[in-house]
Image (tube, rainbow, N blue to C red; front, side, top):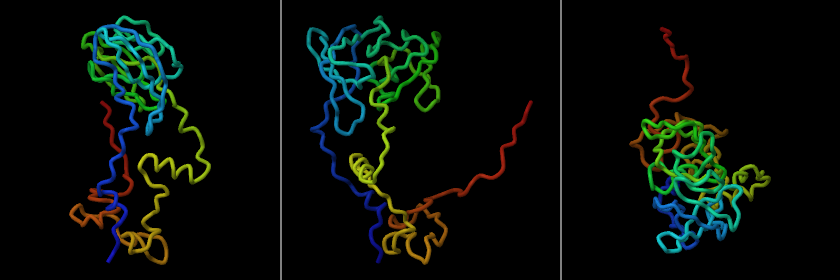
Length: 247
């Protein structure tokens, strides 16, 4: 009888991660009133590469604590302005329709007062391509390169999210890759199925490393057999080219 394969072990429920180390929700406060805050501290949150700015601001005669993804160039004691008619300065939060074209922004809202959904990871940013005044939409160039239309009433933070050079550091040794994967709930190294024994994996065994049978598998197969190309309609490289009709 075969063992429980790696894929089936990963499908089982895992331990829930602790939330006591989380600093809080990183959202732009849902208010239309202009106000000014001060960066009191720049902190690190476990499981997140980008640093967080802790901003203290007075909203409706109450001192509120705001958490935002820190942008490059921010410092403790910096004044952050929130509102529609604020200057286009590093770290300020303003409405998309008032941000000039070509500006690099982060923590962008899809719709008004949703808190910011786009470009929140370390080193990411979105570039404003243009504004459509008729439809009240703004054209954004996403980190992937595609262009997307969002509401011009949404808000964004001026600047690029800090911590962008984290992937440029070479790994150099296997233990670094091991602990990097462990911090993200992943396994390193990942052993190939053909390198295992037949008791450990359906692709294992043989006098040389090969699968030995078609790797396509039915979606109705047992969970312990679902490895390879599951429910594939087709396999291999696509041959030929598309015919383009010129009018």
